[in-house]
Amino acid sequence: MQLKRGVLFSRRSVLRRVDLLSKQIISDLGNSIHAVFLLKGATVFFTHLMERLHHHGAEVSFHPMSVSSYSGTRSSGKIRVRLDIDRIRGKDILVVEDIVDTGLTIDYVMRHLKKKGAGEIRVCSLFDKPEKRKVKVRIDYAGYAIPDIFIVGFGMDCGERYRDLPYVAEVKNG
Ligand code: IMP
Ligand code: MG
Image 1 (tube, rainbow, N blue to C red):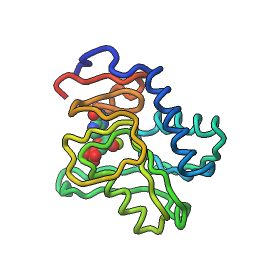
Image 2 (tube, rainbow, N blue to C red; image 1 turned 30 degrees about the vertical axis):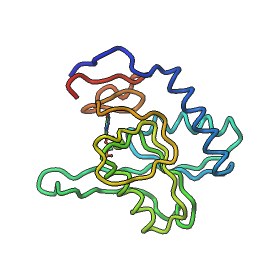
Image 3 (cartoon, rainbow, N blue to C red; image 1 turned 180 degrees about the horizontal axis):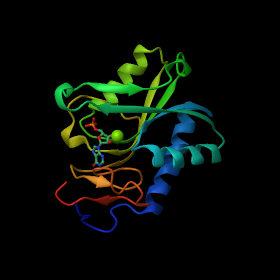
Image 4 (cartoon, protein in one colour; image 1 turned 135 degrees about the vertical axis):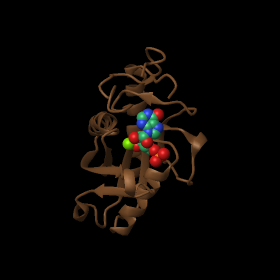
């Protein structure tokens, strides 16, 4: 697959947005943040977000969470979760995601964390694609709302490619 344009959101623009999000998060949640970020896509975003949260005076603990859809015979909407759950019990959690599309992933994650005893859960997503939403989810902190296009870079992939791009680009015929 090919990239449509060189740059859709520049690194500079994204980093500026991440800085604003970090300030908003601290003003709402205070300076002790327990984050759960979703592998692999949110890794780059979360790393930058954490750096900005720290810069603005917050202390951040984090837990990566792996959520992957089954394929083949077990494909009917089942999701496999990996997370050291004892660490989040009773704590307010900031869930950090790269992009919310249908909303199914984030909805599942929130239900899962609740079931496992998390306190209040807030959601921060760098991108929000509201057009194909299937379940209602509240995104407390969204970087950019975008139309129904497929984007890569800054940790986001298309078939495991382009995660390494230091900016965000659109994929052709995504
Ligand atoms: P949802 O469950 O439909 O909301 O999908 C969310 C997940 O799909 C995200 O965690 C992303 O990994 C992936 N995803 C959705 N849209 C895009 C995109 O445009 N580029 C890269 N990944 C995407
Ligand atoms: Mg993802």
